[in-house]
Image (tube, rainbow, N blue to C red; front, side, top):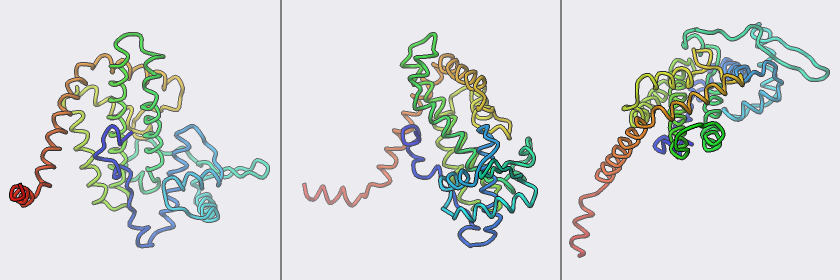
Length: 284
């Protein structure tokens, strides 16, 4: 989806660099931080109890592999620290939060405990799945308007949401005790540039809804999309926006096209070597 919607970010949007991992310091706290982030991702999906195996499989998606025994060790340490509780169902052991994760807490304090990569990327993946079925959503739900135009507009709005999700994620990463701040600040600058190109003539009221309600996870004031009724309501609203702001999106697409064309010409100009032109002239 990034390759299609914002190709200039392809290959960098999901970069994560942790100083602790590189320098082999505070790795215990780093593992706990990541495991709590994985449990948070499951929690926001509505899955309150998870097994060691589920944590292990999820860990592989986001971080370098570690042994299941290591994951088990840290899960039990978190239990001893009263962060988690443990339940048995026959031979299966489940872990869950002792208390619900805090809401309306400063991102700085939150990232001291929880890695936010898993929950934010889960949210991005959720919206990417909507992006991939935009045509089906329009056919099944749209009551009025040109369906092809509505599909394009819906995909555009979802693309903007995903860029906002990635920016929200990186803003939290700059606060993390384990991360390389300069790396995440650079990623925010790249995301800001991509967002400016794609949103600077869209209405402010629309962008506020896309940025806060849909692009932020529930713990920081965003919508919880795990409830079916809320999900249906959100999709219906996005379709209304796709219809209501059709002219704005059309104008934004025109501006974006001109801007990308201009940047492409500048890039060609910068990469051109004047000596090459002279050599071609002599050859002719």
